[in-house]
Image 1 (cartoon, rainbow, N blue to C red):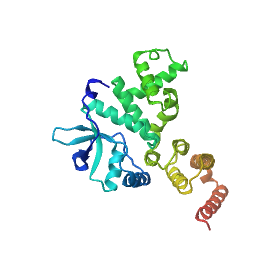
Image 2 (cartoon, rainbow, N blue to C red; image 1 turned 30 degrees about the vertical axis):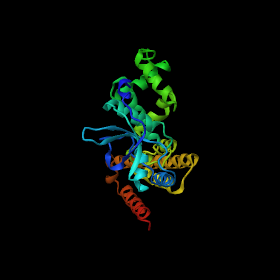
Image 3 (tube, helix red, strand yellow; image 1 turned 180 degrees about the vertical axis):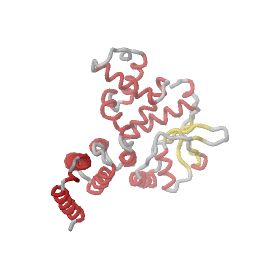
Image 4 (tube, helix red, strand yellow; image 1 turned 60 degrees about the horizontal axis):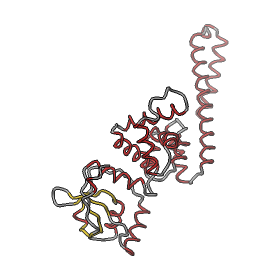
Length: 289
């Protein structure tokens, strides 16, 4: 982040909420309604304890850089003005500050945190997010001795390590092992994870159910009953065992059908009658008679 852009700063002051506009995009996408209500109640009683960070726009308004949760809660509390610090920032610095501010807050969910770290890394090393993911996986493989080293120790790797060290949330190895897999989760799980209703370790466990309908059913059960991680793993094992048995049975039926079609059973009256009786029994079994 450039230092010159941070020099133009004003002290804390009050401005009208109507003068604050949101940026085109925000690192944070979900706000827990219950926690937002709690913050609103606190603001009603004690006021906004930490000022919002804004930057001036060309039309005499102020664009929010950091503090959207405080802004939302202030509106809920009926405030008409909020304390702010005004800082002249370019687009890149504003985005970085917004990312960092969000990443250092405890109530950010794991998916938002993962996406935020990737966005911050992408800015720092001037690469796309897919390229950052590829670099991190390469660093992991190099550290494990799976590939010839050509990234570890490079200026790019040093910047990546520095970002994780400055954030103090986790090291890059833990991020690659535990957080990058979240990006590959099925959309139904990602949606619940983003809403904050599901811990990421539980999300990873549920994702091991490949059948979409069964996975959705388990997801609903986990949320409704607040199943523990061990309880989820047990249910996943049961479901996958059922699916395996069903697949084995289906495969056996398919093989039997192909064998019957290719056989000369139709030329044998006795065998054909036995097959007809078996078909009647199967129909009764399936229909529940």
